[in-house]
Length: 214
Image (tube, rainbow, N blue to C red; front, side, top):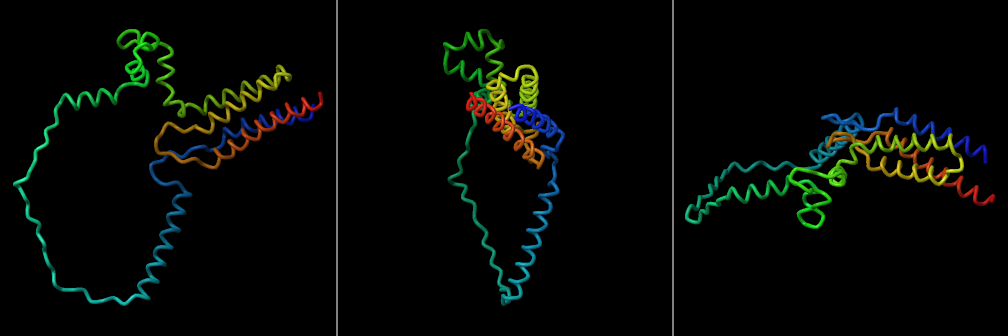
């Protein structure tokens, strides 16, 4: 059992070192891998076009040009009028936060979320932060991994807590994304995800092994 615990700690350190690898690409242009794929597809399309030109008889173009000018029918023209009240109500509805939408739909929850105008409780702040959790989930994952490693050095018997922390770390890392809507996951992200998954499975295996020995 001592060997398994030592290996688990080493694997844990290796997992933390994976955070030094490149995770995301957030550039405006294409990455090197996408450029290579685009160049390859371009060459394939050029080769296919060359084959089609060589195997196709080109017919002379018709010199007759017919211009069909559509006539405007102004008799059935309809003018649509957008009322400013409708536009304002739509913009206000879209700008509402999740806690405001919940308190509007369920009035009995308003004292728990927004007791006064422009006043949000802690629970409302948590609800409003949920849509953005993926942007800082990498930090949460790292925090869970550090706490899990600390528990391994403090109390080795708290294996269930360790596995629970590892599980939460893997979940948050799976939904992680950078502070950019246009991004690509790089190889370092998948390496780190594999290490976190293996670490979680191995710590769970240690629990099963200790139960079997008892």
